[in-house]
Image (cartoon, rainbow over all chains, first blue to last red; front, side):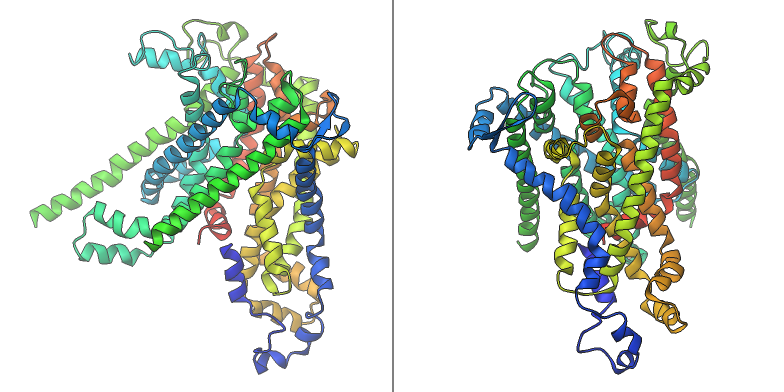
Length: 324
Length: 283
């Protein structure tokens, strides 16, 4: 959003009546660069085709599918009214799935944000080997999520996983734990992986935010005799606010839409008790006995609305606090 | 004076010893899972079933990598991944460069609407729309085609590329382009010979981001590419470990082959990553 404003400020409209005489004296600017809206369509055309054809149209199809009936092989069987939504609401698994989703999103985002704040603070300091640490941090970010998820299935393995071995060696646990098979440990185990893969992006956003804070503000705080904690609270955090906002909103969207981790780590558990609304939606359409495209589409529509409401709610709360 | 000197000394100890040590610990922790991946990839099959499990192999079997590379299935997945990622990156560039340039340089009716539209597409993950995408490509008879996956990857990574490039283009002074135009460069010539080279870091960032995003994409490929010969790496390698056969070392050898290049690519834009990300969102 902010790029748009910056761009606009940096480049006054070509056809603006306030153009300076100096500008007006350059005929090429007006003749060749300023035309109707057809050139705009030409320059934006390819992007518009992609967005309309592969984002908006499928979104429309999704909404339409949520009000339609389909055969088990996916053929259209006419309108279903709101049946898909009522069927969805009647699913026994739905309350559990919604609860899992809430815990998953809130836990992953909250833990990620807190850890990343510390991580960014640490990486902002100059020290020998900082570059290596920053490169190490890139690995979980760049690596395919599905590959990382399968790696953790192996690490969490009851018999052969290295985690049980390591924790037993540390005497944290007495015997092996079936991390992904036990109802009480699977969600924390998935959350840990979720945090692990979300950390790099978030830390980098904060690092960028930290580096944009003018150094003389810190010097001024030091002159005033502010303690390190006080400086952090009164200088760093307020100025990190835009970065914080962006990181929270983007992480909410990413984590909510996250598929591979839950899909993979929860793979061998039957039923929907550890699914989020995203994997639940996928299973309804493609993997469970239900094979119901219509109901799955209804779940997708609800998903989009849920994340929209969550983000708006968060932004409102933040704005409200700012005004108070 | 003494206390101040002591303070300075403590500071230098912290800088020389404590911080690097903490950094080393942090780097090791972050890399540990991937070290497990590597150690498992070079274990002989027999050692995978050892209890209690060992972190490192007793016999290092680097031949596991050669086995995977020689596997025709792996070669097929790799080919699909390469074709899809390269084509998606090309499509994104062709669409994003003109759009980002035009919106950075001009105010026109619908400009805000267009940028908002781009932002909205960034909010939609392909995962959220996967049922709609499936319907679309099913009805268009494009299931199991490269085109379906390339189009999807391009469309959903377009927003990022446009935002990054828009920031870079906007930061290039208009005067430079005007000078080029006075020297007789046409509109396209100016863009190609002056503006694009100046915005190169942005282009590189957009290219690498798109390539990696397409390379790592999973859920759409899982849904659209059901035919064995059309599966990319992210989907294909899962057949190494199923309920019936467990070739963990093959799975991880293949994963490492897939991960290492993208990590190197990512690290190569590390310098611009922070700047690129701030251009897109934080400012």
